[in-house]
Length: 451
Image (cartoon, rainbow, N blue to C red; front, side, top):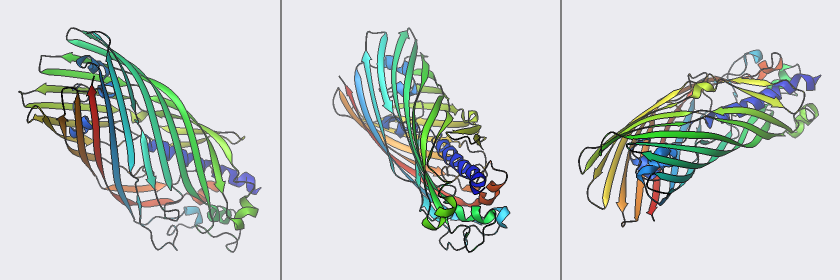
């Protein structure tokens, strides 16, 4: 009887683990060139100044010759959580969540290194081939194992690798480009399981089960390969002005993984045969992206650029989990919204050797409310302020650096742990209520070689 009642809670918990983390991978990484970083990636689909255009708009390869580009970015987030009245499940009487925990605040965010590599080959004066490698989605957050929100999430680590061959063709003032991508995703997630609340809720005495004091632990690892495409257009309005359009399709990942559970010794008699390792699958749709960009040289020294990018997060309405066992599917609601990014930038060419870059951007979050926000994804609307420089070493080689500071709006969270189990799930539906004070710094560097 215990096993029949508790298994749905286990599976609902695993569902939440996956959904919150892969939603977090939904925060697309835009750090795909150090030169673009200096402009807050304004004009990305139109500037076409180096091989990173393979990602932003493959049609831009027609403005290049033969070149290689290597770049790297260090993303340094800070995210400090302050608790503001988190409560335990109403089925257990409500009240303060984890009342014996005197340190109710926590910090999240881990530094991450994001690589880029691009190569362009001029086949003839009108036809170009390119290959790009980058990491388009990712997240790294980690809390202490005993923090107040441990049932919602502890470790969230998602990495993607994207391999993107492309071609481009020039027809007068118009260039067109097309590419395909093979994308690999790898996910590691952990969270605590409130065994004390589960067994207390189904009738065991407090001497045996103490809510928030008899925790188990869950770890999920999963990976997958998937494929998508991108295309773009670049039109030269004049010798000094151009407009670009690019589209990158969404990626459907059929993730396969393993869930491993750790149960403390005194809970083994109750849960040892229930919380057993299992396999699971999930279909996760990462969004498409559409960009319109403009670039213009004002004179020999100054140029300006702008970009509008829409990311279709509204496709991510729910996450459905299928299990290797006979357990029914678990469903987690997301209700995310499309998010827009608007950026403007300026370049100043001080000399034949030095170019300086500046940019600003407004970047919307797809998370619709504090109720849908999770500690795995503690982001909000943000403002980018960036600057950078390019040094022309010689005719063939240049080196660029960029820096951005992201100001993130005050972030409220009021998230109830979801469960699809109508009976036992009520006993783990704790609510995490608080706020995050967050910001991000990014340092980028790249080397470009025209050969």
